[in-house]
Image 1 (cartoon, rainbow, N blue to C red):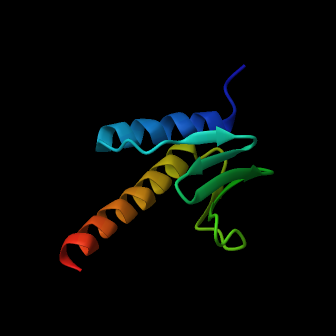
Image 2: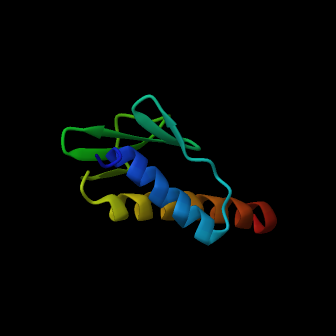
Image 3: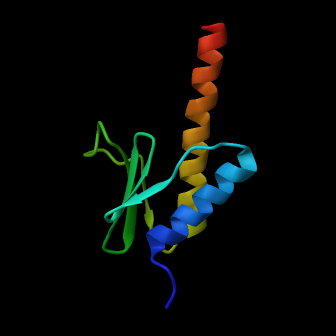
Length: 92
C-alpha cells in the first residue's frame, strides 16, 4: 500500500526545502499539512492550499494526483515569502 497523498506531498515539500536550504517544518496534523500559515488538505480528488487566516479563498487548488506540482507550488510560495520579508527587513 502506498503512502497517503498528503504524506507524499509532505515528503516532496521537505525535499524541496532541503534543496533550498530551508529548515521550515512541514507538519502532518490530523488530515492536514501545516507549513507556517498554510494549510493543505484533500477534498475528493482535489488538494487545496489555503492561508489559515483566509481559509475560504484557496491559494492553490490542484488535482491530488499532481503531487509534484502541489509540492513545488507550496515550496515556491513559502520561499518567496521568506525572501520578500528578508529584503523588506533589510531594504524596506
